[in-house]
Amino acid sequence: MPFIFNVYSVLLLPCFVQGIVISVVLLTRGRQHGTPADGWLALLLLLSVARVTQWMLGFAGWYDSHDAFSTFMFYFPFNNWLAVGPALYFYFRSLTNQAFQFRRRDGWHFAPALLYLSWRLLMFLYDVGWEHALLGQPLRGHFGTKGTLSVWLQTARFGFWPEVLGYVSIALYASLTLRDYRAYGRYVNDNFSDTERIRFAWLRNVVVAVLVGVGVTLVFEVVNAALFPLNYVQSWYDYLFTGILIYYLSIAGLLANHRLTAPLHFSPVPDAAEVAVPAVAAEATSHEPKPLVTLSPSAVPVHTASALSETAVGEPSLAEPLATLEADPELLRWTERLLEHMRAKRPYLAPELTLGELATQLRTNTSWLSRVINTGCGQNFNDFINEYRVQEAERKLRDPQLRHYTLLAVALESGFNSKSTFNRVFRKLRGTTPSEAARRNV
Image (cartoon, rainbow, N blue to C red):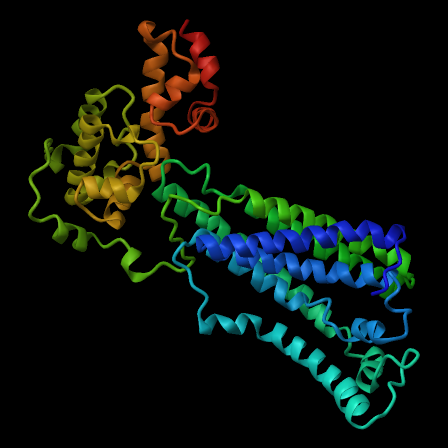
């Protein structure tokens, strides 16, 4: 197999090897651990590898070998942009939903990409299979290595449309993924108290990186078509940038939390079972005991907020949602019950507490409990739980008997899973760092 080693082919060769090796690792890991997200990322990598391969082999002499290797270069679908957008979107879907399965009805997302592959296969079968192999006609283009349809496509006016549609497809799917990623952020905050490992902040960077990579390619295409023709060496830099993207996707894939203990079931379109229905919650809890604290709805405007705020120093106040609570006695009753449970049982000390676990403790469903926290307490679940943890940490930092505690010990005993999460949450809720708060208490 010919391969000319020069500066242009050699610099792209490591990107090719990196992409192939990491794709195999991801596919193997996905099969062993049942993580479809690894398979989708492997597909993204292979699509980028295929694009780099074209220019790597071109500078390695395959276009100029004037044999079967040249014929391969003219018919292989190196640039299938139409598959990149759907692969990126389903990577996101499978990463954020452990129960997600690619169904037959999802196949239409890849219909344009399959049509493009079918067209490339049809050209090969007609030119090489029918005209050359069966009819014995020579391939008339590029020194006898290129057939009729391939020559015609090179001069056809619509030959560039698959790439244009590919750019549009990537832009649309990237926008869809970023939109759903924002919704996923809300889902995480509403269901989990420890979100550091499942927030997937790097996922947004992957989407942006893919967009930047396509943008660079588009700039090269515009310059080549509208300003001045680019030679092979000038166009090579576009493929080098794709090689850099391969390295970035590889690192992101290997560092991804492919085996998570958190039950992620995010869906961009909520299922009917996920919609909060107070009547269902009331029915499910109609046989439960009365809450430990019962306040008269008529006393809500003044006495409820003061009574609750006096129960525990710094506890989440009901001053803002009082109007809603006054109009919904059941919501008021459950808000009081929730706060009493937080005081008595201190479930927030469990580092990986989820909305589902707290709902089980209170013998209700997650939809109703989410409404109680969001409306009755004016916070999402993540901030609600972490507020208690920060208050617990502040009490420990003020306690003279615990001065020997390190910040990590304070964090772990307050319900945080790590020091980094402790620092991030403390700064978010208090506008300062735990170390600064500790120094003020000395």
